[in-house]
Image (cartoon, rainbow, N blue to C red; front, side, top):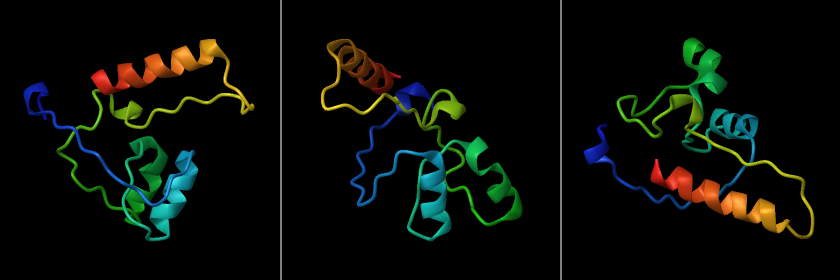
Length: 96
């Protein structure tokens, strides 16, 4: 897709995981679709246990960043610096 054809798609999910391995296991257990980096499912695509859908669509300008995670130590409160950075990261990722 070229930049002029970009569309925003909102998806309501009944399941949320915070790891690529968790995503892969859910899909391998036939729970639905996922947007996952190709490096994480390379062998499953090669052996046919998973099938790529919508291969002509680009979900990120950088294929390896199609799923981006911010990982931080879980505490009762997030530090103001971390909160500002996370807010910036969200806005930045929405813009690209």
